[in-house]
Image (spheres, each protein chain N blue to C red):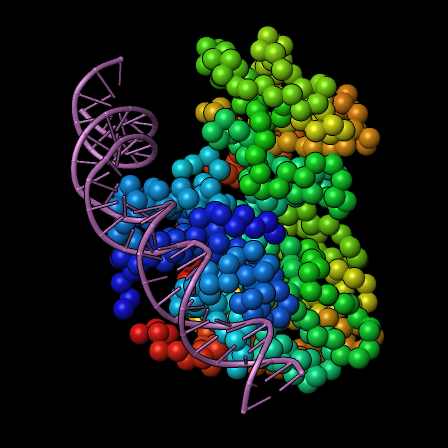
Length: 266
Length: 266
DNA sequence: TAAGAAATTATCATTTTCCGGAATTAAAGC
DNA sequence: GCTTTAATTCCGGAAAATGATAATTTCTTA
């Protein structure tokens, strides 16, 4: 059953990590202990273990905990691996074929967009985001979606902190314009990019959401403006959204993927 | 990926998960066991545990393993939660870009310098302080700053207690010299290191202070002496101090970030 | 500044889990 | 169909995690 009161140490470790990851602010040991009904000394010991391994770390200057670097690195890999599985890759390939352009899945990590999977269709034109490559936030559709979904204050602060490097004439380099674009993006639910990173290449992206509406990754298209104009990009949004929904479903109930082994959630 | 086979069960669990996540294709038990040098029966048991918890699962119709749903869910949360450190990282990235060299944020814990975040610019030259690594106090700029700000008696005692290991010809290994350097450091407000830990690498650091002038962490640069000489380091101090001030603001307001609810459902 | 409250660390007998060689079973090769 | 090899399960000794209690430190508050 659901009570993890006396499960193994491993369950507790993951429960703690999960709790910290699900909080919007850094969590104190006491909070964690209370939330998971752990004895205080035990909580200290367990959290200490996790801290030593870099899975949790103290928020700088405080005693509260946030997710650690090791954990973030691992998580990025996991997300990448998850999207590379056959079924999900097939979805990606299908939408790429339907659209007829290069599609890619990207996540945000360390304030850059990292591409975890991509499918290119025949012509090696346009922008090739190969898995593992990274691009800045302010001039990619995925980056815009990510930023647009942050709480307002965090968004403002982040925009101020980012180095808004100019790559082309249309790169957005001032905070005000960027904030405005992000506002639109949030309302609209998807993002476009108009030759802001590479001249001659436009693109758009839609979010891939978890069951509880958290942003997991983005699904996007990059295409030479010679082939598809900035305004014409809109016609890709529909298919992309459909595919994104499919992808989030496979993330949700991949039970069909694996086998349905009784222990699933009973 | 290092695999210390005789660490705790938790390390093994994470090593396995990490291995699976880093593979392009589903991994068999034997592969995993071989890669992490685990006894075969042990690998089976551990992987079985992970499978029960939904952290790993068998790829459709095979006995090979891929990342499980629980793990993907957790990872998505972790990536989302990482925005808490996003601003800090963005500031760090910006100063690294300005300076053009590897920058890192370090704190002192248990009498060693632990690096909590770092940004490297392009070439993997110079010294890589990867988050999670630790270095001695007496031969790092961050360590010097920390010691220099201790009350005099505590400082003396600590210097006496430290094992002043010699790493290079210029490592400071006698207490008297060290005390003198610390004195200078305190007056000056920042620290330099002249190939004292790793030959061919020099560096400098400035303190990140709380509003009440308490030391929270240090912001530093590491650079190959071939590129920047020991004396030339001084030109980094200005930009570093500016960034440190920004960081101390950023870090302090960390709590308010998460304030606006996570479930912002638009 | 001092008294009090809360948080953190230390100790330790008990319980639980882990470990991996040996044995068993399934799969592959001939 | 039989042999060889790989995958899987068993199980008792070894190692650890556990959490009550208590001591210590740190933070609040008067």
